[in-house]
Each structure stands twice: as structure tokens, then as C-alpha cells.
Amino acid sequence: MSSGSIVTGVLAPHPPHLIYAENPEQNEPQAECGWEGLRWGYERLRRNLSKKDFDVLVVYSPHWATMVGTHFLGVPHFKSVSVDPIFPNLFRFHYELDVDVELSQAIHDEAASQGMVTKMMTNPDFRVDYGTIISCHLSHPAWDKPIVAISSNRAARMFNNDYMQVNAIKLGQATRKAIEKSGKRAILLASNSLSHRHFVTEPPLPEDMSKEHISHHGQYLWDMRMLELMRAGRSKEMLDILPDFTEQTVAETDSGALSWLMSAMDYPDYAAEVHAYGTVIGTGNAVVEWDAQSQGVTP
Amino acid sequence: MSHVAGGWLVPGMPHPLMCPERNAGWNKIRQAFDQARKEIEQSDADLLVIYSTFWPSIIGHQIQALAEPKWTHVDEEWHELGSIDYEFKIDAHFAESIRAACQKRGLHARTVAYQGFPIDTGSIVALKLLNPDNKIPAVILSSNVYSDRAETIVFGKACHDAVKEEGRKAVGIAVSALSNRLFTEIVADDQDHIHSLKDDEWNQKYLEFLNLGRLEDVSQLSRQFHREARVHKVSNFKPFWWLSAFMGQHNRYQGKTLAYEPIYGTGAAVVGLWPAESAARDLEYDENDPEQYEGDRNVLSSSQQNSDFGGPDVADGYPNGKDGI
Ligand SMILES: [Fe+2]
Image (cartoon, rainbow over all chains, first blue to last red; front, side):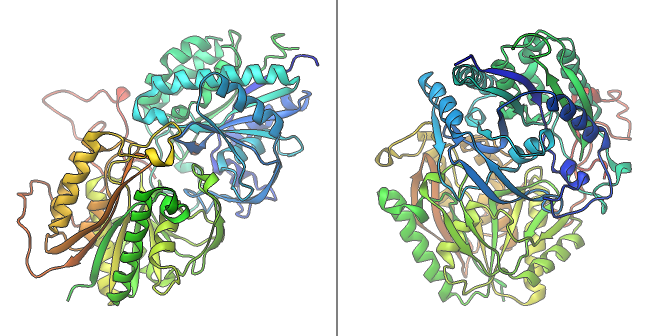
């Protein structure tokens, strides 16, 4: 079997607002408009992905938070409705999806062989987390490819963000190895926002864009610093400061998703394409793509 | 007469519900839940008000208001323990009363009433074990991740206002661990123990106060408990701020710990508090007692100039909760 590869890797944040504003048929609430900058960025990403041949989406989500190791979906098919516990007024999404259990198990085994604590999730009544669903839908709304969903291990809360990063990097290496051995072509999604300070109230019309801005200029400066490094292909340097960034901006990178992505992609030294940056209820979000294939890094 | 018939601290981990037989301690917690259920039934309470630290919110305070939520729940961490079917009876009218009372006290709050809303494991465990036949209608309250002491206390008072206004006889239930340090590796059932001796000592100290009915004292010690015995997953240790404010902010209670055991390293306790004739001694309180929530003070980018020190460097700071919209 030919060697599998990571075709492209994406920072694919999951604010439910973007689904709400897009009005897909699967979502119950309806919006007039909103967050177009980010939504059009996702549109550009989708145009790029539509030109690619791939077998599976591998997504790492902060909203499947586990403390005892890293968990992997181990049931081939799920169908249910996902209601966002924070923004139930915006996101009540009927989903149906397939899981590549074989690859899921392979990443699980590879991580376990490196000494990581791992668990397969085999309960068919499990509800797939909304981070996974939103990032997958916005990146590839056809839902015609299976996914692998990886939980976000939060053991670092007992220590610090450096501990988080060490583990996420290990998991990234295991992910890459398992994908290579599988012979499959994978798209990787790191499902997280950047700076993550929210407003604690919502305008009567959630999509009222006159109320949308970054929660604080300090958060914005940090987001821009991270994006500059991504755009310059300086991913290692970006990871070096990621623990500080995470602490200073209470960033959703505390989940380990972005560190995992960079490690799985072996620290890209080519420029990332920032499809969009925008704020959602005060948090900083960017849709960023590392197109390994067009860089000739992977076939 | 007091409108709050009693208060409880219960843990929210699913083990006492799903597999009490696997560990003697989990079984003791389960038996304590059963005892608590009997005591609540005997109290003639007509309402359960649950404050769950397992339900985080961002947009103010959320109040469950779907009259008959029904679902098959699977915990994101403990999925291998099985699926939990539930069907609850929520007092939707009272949920709205709490929302209105919150608004009067300056809090942002909203009811949520959606079939399929993911009710948290802690609330499910509490309602399944304390109110298995839905004899008593309940409301469930979220724990706002950003709120700190003042806001949480005002929230507790608002819930008390609603109970009083509606002439209800309520039991307050805080769903929370004491120490929350969980094992991050797979630990055999029979090897469970409190994660560290220090956590255990702080838990015991807290329980000593609770056994004396010193609820407000325990509330006042929340910050210290957070520093000493909590993994800082959220901004502070809030359940006793809420519970004490809900129950009148005093020490005139009779407390009883029905069980204290480890669940996967965390400190799990079932503690009941009932009104008493006389109070245990008070601490001297040096924290203020807010009646109204007026938001956080923005000390980083205040429009009021700090004439002594020039302006603060906002670029290095965090915003606070009263920004923007
Ligand atoms: Fe999120």
C-alpha cells in the first residue's frame, strides 16, 4: 500500500454563530446574516478542499474534553441532534456522520504504543461534540467523507500549558505515523478559536454586527502576532510562544488542537494561508490552511 | 418562616448512579444519596433548585425551562459506564420567575427550553438519585465561567427572591466535588483514593464546618478552598457562594455529612443542611455583601484617569466582564 499522507491541515474554529448565520438545512434556528468575513473565509477554504482528493477528515475538538487520556470515536455511524450548551438559541443541528473506525483505532494504538493514555469510545448513544460537528460542516458540508474525532485531553489543567503542548505534540506524531501507515489521504482540522475572551451578554439580535468586535485590544495584538508567524511559515516559533499566548489571551489553544496540528504536519516552514480572521462574541477566530500538497511536502 | 427548607451538597460524578457496586466508597455515596432522597421527601419541599458546577455558561446565567426534558445521555468522559435514560419534571414557570428576579438584581439571565438540550451529568445524577419519580418539580441553574463572588452571591439572592415571591418551599442543591483533582491515568476501581493528602485535609476541614452548620463561614472560605484544594478549571469555587446566598447567608443550620469518599481521586461528599434554632459561631467577615450586580470594575482601561500612576498598559491586560454588548 502506498504511504498515506496529510493532504492539508486547517485551523478550523467552531463558533456555532457561523453555522447559525449560514442557515444550513440541518440547523433549526434561522439568521438573517452575520460574521460574513469568517464565513467567506471558510468558503475559500472549501474551494481549495474541493480540488483535493482525500479519504478522511481527522478533527481534534476542545468540546470533547477528557481528563483521563485521549479518547477516539469508535462507532461507525452516528445520527442525532447536537444542541450547543452555551448557545442553544443558535445551534440545534441534526447530524448524521460516518467514522473511519479503522483509522481511529490505528491512531489510538499508535498513541498508546508511545505510552499515552488512550481510550476508544464505543457507546453508540454518545453524542458527537459540537466543535467536531461545526468544524467538519464548515470545512466540508457534504458529509460524504468519514471522520476521525479525537478528544482534547485536559490533564494540563493540573499543571500548565507547556504540559499540554508536550502531550499534544506526542499525539500529533502518533497521528502522522498512523495516517502514513494507513495509506489514506487525510485532511486535519484543529477546531479552536485563538484569543477566547467572550462577552457575557448577547445582543437581542445575535447577528447584529454593530455589536461585534474583539473583546480587548490586547487579545487582538496577540492574535495578530500568532497569525504573522503562521503567514511567515514560522510554525516552530509560533509553538514556542503558544503556551504564553494561551495563558495571556485565555486562548482555546489550551485544548492542544493547534499544537497537535503543527506536530502532525511536522512543523510547516512554508507560509500558511489565512483565509479569514474575525471575532465572534468577542473571541478571535481565524481560518488558516497549511496546504502541504501544493507545497510539494506530500504527494 | 424560611422559604428554603434545606440545602445539599452532592457530587456529580456518574459512578454512584451507574456502578456503585464496583467500589465500597461509591456505594456509600449511593446510600447517602438514597438517605438524602428520603430526607428531602420528608421535608415537604415542593421545589428543587439545582446549581450545577457541571453546567458552564458564558451568556449570563442559564436556567433550564423545558417542562419535560427527555434524552439518553452519555458522559463524555465516562461513556463506558453506559447510557443514562432520563425524563425530568422541570418547573418552567418557576424558571421564568428566577429569570425575572435575576433581571431585577442586575444579572443577565435566560431560560433555555429546547428538546435535546444537553443537560449535564451532574444534574442528571442528582435528579435521578434524589428525585427518581419526579415527585418534586425542579429547576437547574448553570454556573457562569466568568462570574466571581459578587455575581454568584447576587445570583443566589435572586433565586431566593423568586422562592419567596412564589411562596414555595425549596431545597437548594449544589452539585459539585470538594477537591476536584481527578486521576489522569486509568486507576483500578479498588485503588481509588483522594488524589492528595492535602486535598483530603482541606475536604475534612470544610466538612467539619459544614457539620456544625456553618454554611456562611464555608461560603466565606471559598476563595481559600479554591486556592488550596481545587484544580483551577474555572475562575473560583462558587457553589457555596450560591448555596449560602440562596439559604440566607447565616450559620443557623444543622449540618450532616452522610458520606465522604473519593471518586476517581476527587472529594465526593453528600452533606445535608437543615434550619436550626441557634447558630454556630461566626467568623468575622471582611468581604462585602452585594445586593445588586453592577458588573466588574474595569480597572485596566477605565475612563477615570489614574492620576498617580498614569494610565494602565491595556495591551498587556485582560478585559473584564462588563465590556461591549
Ligand atoms: Fe469552543
